[in-house]
Length: 163
Image (cartoon, rainbow, N blue to C red; front, side, top):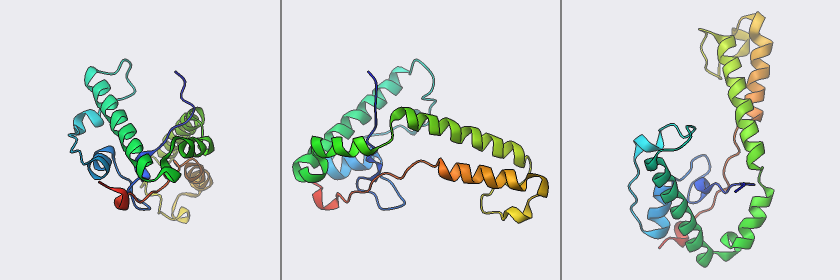
């Protein structure tokens, strides 16, 4: 199985600048109250193999996501039909590109943290307040982090489509 893209449901039912989780979508769209373990959600998902609980958690999230999209497709086929979603996915970055950008962003964050050392890591600090020896590098790394920031999910108002 090779994933080529992904559909971020975080913007479904969210407002610009905030996102909705699967738990909220299940409640709003399907009328389901799905228990979610924050301990499992925050566990290390990079370890292979995943634990049985992580697999169950991921499978439940995938099922809810698919059920939400299926329910929305019957209410708003222009936006959520398989054909509409396929067009949307074709416009998205590939999984490989997303993973590469994630790794580049992580490296840039580490470089910036190393460069700043004990100095405040606040991105709002005016570069002029930084030591001259690191100022240009900090500016470049901040620009790189901004460029590599994850794209915001597309936003869809589903309140009017809710059960």
